[in-house]
Length: 175
Image 1: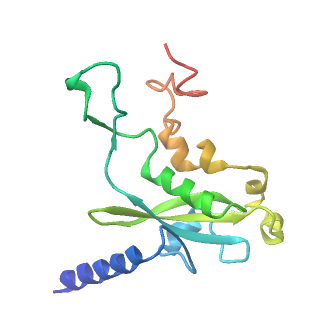
Image 2: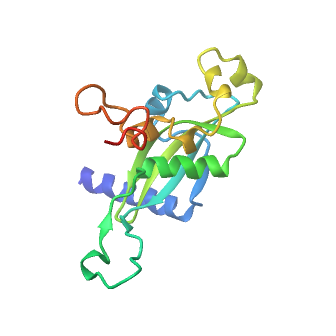
Image 3: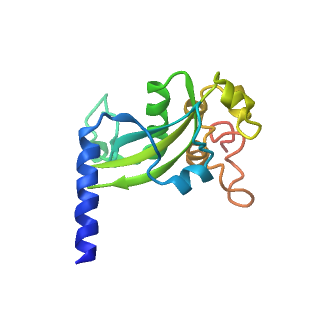
């Protein structure tokens, strides 16, 4: 019975999130422990946004110049993870803020939700904070793939044998 209550409460929560905007600012993080681990502080200059990303895979670009039926309509995974896409959406919505990090909060059959931790580059509280002041010197972290999700998508979480062609970038180190 308890499991059924938990599932129904989770479904109700997701239903309320579905009615929100794609990028919605939230007062408090859903998972406080996780947010604090990733750099969130409950003070001015820091914000949390919940972002909705659709599930599914991207379709291949349409083939031109001739009929090649074996190659049409195939699917392939995107280069970016859904988490990185969510970070970019949040960065576009809150232009004066910089993405620090993000974490997964839930998903249903259609969409996945992430909470993005943002810091205001110009806020005095962020500038004074010794541990978080580094964020003020970096611009466009989400778009350049410098966040943790971006580095993971670029293959930079691995080191050593098997990852020789990931640094400084995949495109530069082709065989």
